Length: 62
Image 1: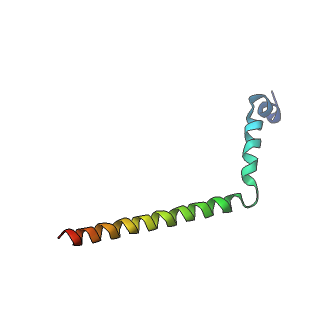
Image 2: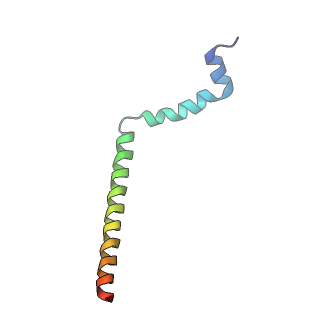
């Protein structure tokens, strides 16, 4: 029976796991979180602008 370590090394899983270790870097997820918040803010402003434009154009055409 093979050891677990031997099975990982033979299957290439060890290399795949090493690639994921960079995601554990301090501050990585903080940056991702900040990016999502900024994107959400931009989408909210765009939605509000579209709603205001629709409301104004409805008033102007009536």
